[in-house]
Length: 77
Image (tube, rainbow, N blue to C red; front, side, top):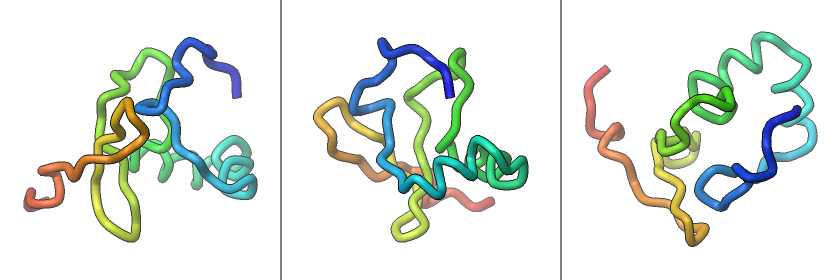
C-alpha cells in the first residue's frame, strides 16, 4: 500500500500472489513475517537487503531482474 512509483525497479520489487499481498497488508502476523524476510520494507529502508525465498534461501534482487545468492545462506544464526 502506498509508496513511491520511483522505487518500482526490478531490484526493489517481488512478484507475489494476490493472497499473500493482501495478507501482508491486512494480517499483522503475516506482515511481521514479511518484514523479517525483507518482503515488506518501509520506504526509508535500504532496498539492497537480501530477500528470503523458502525454496532457496536468501537472495539479492538485481537491476536486470535476476537474483544473486546471498552470503547470508552460509551464516550461522
